[in-house]
Length: 306
Image (cartoon, rainbow, N blue to C red; front, side):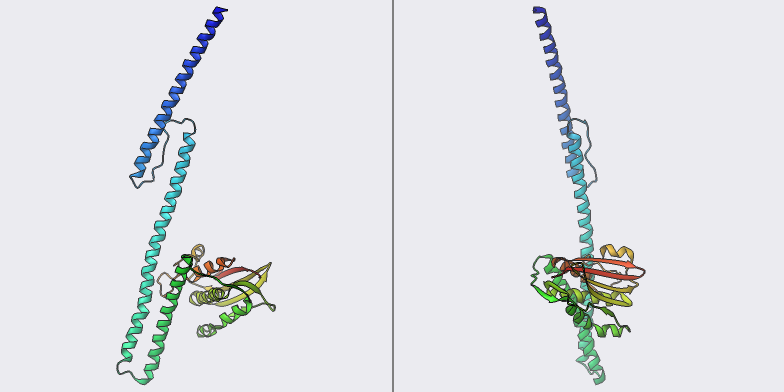
């Protein structure tokens, strides 16, 4: 019996020593791993690098922890790259828009100075109209900038009311009839015979329609089609036209702020027209999409039917 007890104690002692040794080894590995991670984090913190954490000893859950930290760092770096790119585009856009605003103002100032001199009477009215067009253009650009700034700052207050979207849509499009005739074409306007009621901000709806028409006039080359219809509980607006300035790669960014397909900016647009369309539509519970097929550019909007 005593021999059995001694054997048992010996086995127990060996087991305890072995366990303590294993625990000590694991603890050493943990400490080594933690020191390694701290060293690498310090290296990454002080440098602009794409370096990721590595493992010196694969033990316990440290491998999963390192993978998680690396994923967070990669996500952060991607967001940082995107932010840097957006800021670069933003600065370039502001510079271009500043130039676009200054150009018509300089032109208007030049014509005003000529009007102060000895200008033939038949030229005076022509110069006055040119000044008015230049100032109207600047006013429109400033209104878009101010409007978008208010949207982004959350200061745009919408006042929903129920109205016939078909009537408002048709009235707004008709205001640009003269602009289409100057381009030598007549738009096709398709409307339902019955009322299409929506519960939305009427001013914002008008602004959406105006921006769609202006975008079509700037980038369209013909085949203008404006339609409004009722579809499965939604009011659908579809605006399409032929174009030679919009390409497939533009579609994914067509609603981005300051994005313009007119690389030379010869059309003097802010690149905010369709961005405002999308923001206003979404604020009123709708959605916006765009597509390009066989040279025909199309914008589709959906609003919930009242």
